[in-house]
Image 1 (cartoon, chains in turn orange, red, cyan, blue):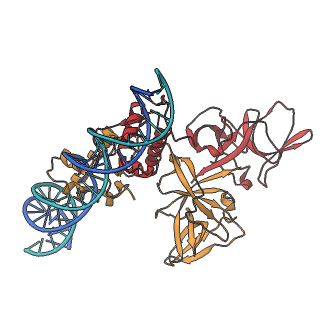
Image 2 (cartoon, rainbow over the protein chains, first blue to last red; image 1 turned 45 degrees about the vertical axis):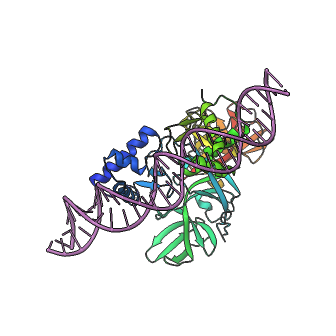
Image 3 (tube, protein in one colour; image 1 turned 90 degrees about the vertical axis):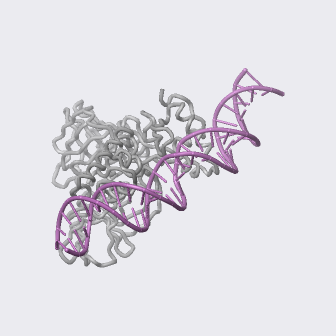
Length: 209
Length: 209
DNA sequence: TTATTAAGTGAACAGATGTTCACTTAATAA
DNA sequence: TTATTAAGTGAACATCTGTTCACTTAATAA
């Protein structure tokens, strides 16, 4: 998602300026600061280029309309804190599932190396459907929302208000949600069925004995 | 230099708000955003407190007069009282085990709720002997040293310079180290055998997908 | 050729933002 | 007691800042 597209000379210039400014100051530049550095008399040009860089996945706007809230996507985060807080939003039953969204039982501090995404959250597993993958009831799953789901990924699927952990396989017209339990059957659903929503990909697992 | 001085309740509050905002947003707050969060109707109070925090070395102003250019001073970017750092000391092979003590590959921040003991450390699992308990190769185990071992606890045993994960059962004269894998046999050893050392109890598990 | 896209100018608006000043209140130390 | 310090209100000022609009220019694709 980030960094595949080709950049024009101007776009590359702006991106480099942004990165250099970031490195030298420790905070991102404003639109005008970039325009000044380029010798522009107007901010509109740089502003448009920044939008393009966002669309191409090189920059991320952390907040809209606020100052200095652009950041390099996927790049280095130099002074960032090593640990961040994750919300525990509810429970996910792996057999006959159930989700209490945004319950926010408590927060949880976790090393940021495990959190690629700023919107990640925690879910507690209830059923046995992923037992063969070493996911047992009571485990906490680190879930990262996003569209970058690939075959074989372990995901959280929302099916008719109910959430389950399953392994994801895209099979032409349909999607197969595969439990990792020899005694359970996969769920098949049409890829456009509105009853299906993928909440995110499972990035980590926490268990407390 | 940085962080030695004592803080008043208000100063600590502001510093914590700053750090939390930073963690949640990825960029520092403005004076007004802090004031709003505190319910203040004026920005002057927070502004003064921020100046004090700078004078005491907790905050650094990266640039004067510019928006969002405060940052946590060096050494002050700690994750807060709720998280602590754990050393990753080596690998433990669950079949034919092997331990590299104090390798200290890296540190890892974890919620302190998971750390009853200050001497806890992390070990990486290598074998398959605990697969039926949902412990698979690559998992990180949170190990808490100590003598309070009970039957059925999952423990790290050091046998002839080699470490293994097993379930612990005290059977009169002998100790049974039970793998959780149907195809593997338990290890029996006399309770006074000097070849056996219990490194600690497994208190948690971390897995990264 | 024509149409499209990226790049840039110039201007402007609304709100965000750091900073300062005068004043009040409460707690604490001398 | 008096003096000092931290904390907070309320108001105001001057910039800073993101965003948008209309228009121009150059390069490129169809």
